[in-house]
Amino acid sequence: MNITSIDIKKLYIETYGCQMNVSDSEVVSAILQKENYQITDKPEEADLILINTCSIRDNAEIRVKGRLENLRIHKKNNKNLKIGVLGCMAERIKDKILEDDPSVDLVVGPDAYRDLPKLLEVVSGGTKGVNTILSLEETYADISPVRLDENNVSAFVSIMRGCNNLCAYCVVPYTRGRERSRDPETILREVKELIQQGYKEVTLLGQNVNSYLWKEDNTDFPDLLEKVAMLSPVLRVRYSTSHPKDLSDKLIQVMSKYDTICKNVHLPIQSGSNNVLERMKRKYTRESYLQKISAIRKAMPEVSVSTDIITGFCGETEDDHLDTLNLMKEVGYDFAFMFKYSERPGTFAAKKYADDIPEETKTRRLNEIIELQNQLSLESKQKDIGEVFEVLIEGRSKKSSEELFGRTSQNKVVVFPKMHFKTGDYVQVKITDCSSATLKGSAIL
Image (cartoon, rainbow, N blue to C red; front, top):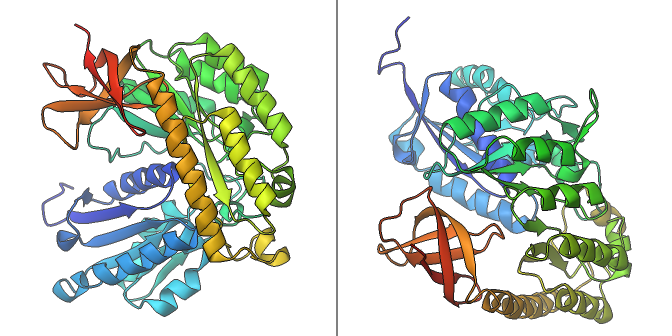
């Protein structure tokens, strides 16, 4: 049967949180595209609005609740409009979402997206559609995601789902379930498709990519990374995220072997204090972490290192905080994601520890961490002045239509005059200036 314009419905989807959520939104879009949904960037013209949510911090959930209130107005203009909440927040507080917001028609967890067509049929009959059942097998390996990025340069490829680490503060194992790895052949097929479509960079995604393992042939993450790196000489390969306890010498060797593998390692420390790391159930020590950093830099002197830091975790003393600051100085991070501890219901910490650090202390410590990292980021970029880097252009600079921006292999943003270059080009750029956030330079012709 031919599809007419009457059959086509419009889908508006907003994504909050991590890169994995971005990847999931692309899977959802692919599933619904087969149901004759067309992506729109205008919520006011949508027949279906989906919010893909994050539960990693309380602030993320507050933002989503506020956004749902704003989107509710569109139901007044379109009585047939359906609104759905997807992802981790849907998994964590499904009943409360429906109780608090009657405008929500659909609540779907991260492992139930294949059920969306059936759930939408239920919703069309006037009943709420809910599926938040977690799976031990689902990886969406057979679904080719609909890429939602605008530049067609970089893409995310999910290689596994879930997490087994059960860190004391983290809600992810409860909202995304246990680890399961995706068949490497399906991953390679997806990357090949991206190469054929002209993409120049892929990021392999997992909550802990270092624990990836396809048991049928014992393909581990370094094996997979090497196979992807060998697909094309013009494809950059990144990955996120690594757990320090699982980063292996084999992975470091593979990274150092291939120019196509970007020389950036994101290695979350969370705290520089052994006491806090033990309470967090991170399963490594400050000393073992620093040994990993030393091994990485010995194999790849040009590497950049980024991290995640949580301040104000339960029982954190001023000495613990100083340990974090001192470790930051010792490592000299190129950039970092920094947060105040936010208690998440259902986690080990919420059940066993008191959230006993006053909010003003958390804020003060976070500000000190941010101030130090700004200094470290500036020092890192100042070292790049005078150097030449290969930059993959991602688009036009936000500040000037006469400038382009892109990233180095080390994941540092570079801005430079556009001249005749275009998005997707590789350009050799000499660095002439910098801020703590951005490198500035000029292309070498």
